[in-house]
Length: 132
Image 1 (cartoon, helix red, strand yellow):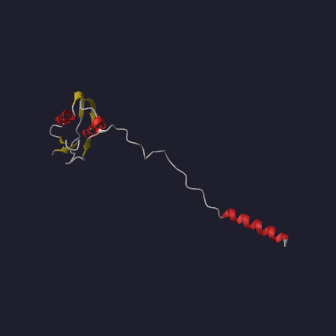
Image 2 (cartoon, helix red, strand yellow):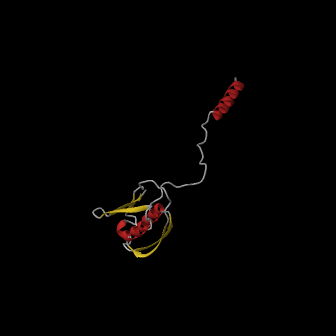
Image 3 (cartoon, helix red, strand yellow):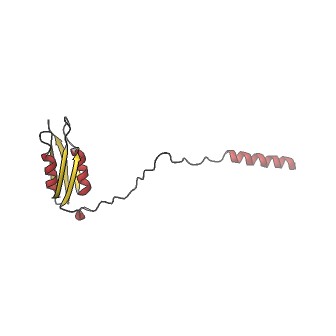
């Protein structure tokens, strides 16, 4: 009877180890934090006059301008992008309106920049309209 009890205990221990839960899934791939705080200054701390230098696509120029002026909301562009446009600006001590005007001026017959300020809410809206 003693041998049966020992064998029963040994079988129970082995069976208990076999039915233990598997370890949780591990992380695979590169680490990309998703809950990073936004360190852009609030719009009332953004300088009204700034320097802006950019060379490249006009849509990316608008995004680069938004990094300097967080109150600017860039709306997706409209129209068909038939030909690529190129922006090359090196502006010193300009306002947001003047910077957008200079980007639009380089569009010629390819695109134009639409700017709509919302002074009541302290926001500005802008987008690129591609011409045919």
